[in-house]
Amino acid sequence: MRKLVLDFDVTVLVPLILVAIGVLWNSVRRYWESRSDYRASLKRIERPFDSREDEDEFLEWGSKRCTEWRKDRRLLWLTSIVFVAICALMMAPDGFKVSVAEGFWSLMWFVGAASFIICIPMAWHYSKESDWLKFGICLLAMLIAAASAEHFLHQKDNAHHVNCPHCGDDDDDQPDDN
Image (tube, rainbow, N blue to C red; front, side, top):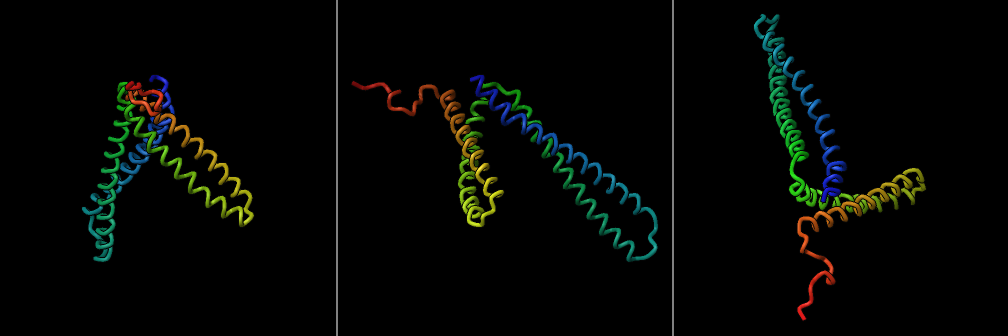
């Protein structure tokens, strides 16, 4: 079971944490930028405008900044919650991680199989056009998709056997009633 958990940590959780850190950093940066724009628009309201058109233009700009600030604040909260959830999953007990991993690997097997199937007509199209570089890239993508789908299928089966050790998919594993 520990090997399954380590594989899930290394192949899924660590990359997700790195992506979540990048998205969280971008969210924080956008939030601070929109917050400073929003505060600048509030300070500008206190000064008189040269004309009515300038005031209307500024109010439109200010309302747009206010809307962006609210959206960025919501995005910051969402990315923070996702980051905390992924980090909490990293610290979760091994039994829970294996249950989560089984579902995740089922999804990843489907994605890998779909990617393989999508690459087949693309490779066929590029071979008919004699675009050998793109054809070779499609063949490599097919190879990677097939290998990853096969890996995720085996990991899903392994996680299922850990979660349900008495469940077998072979007829030889079932006891005879005779």
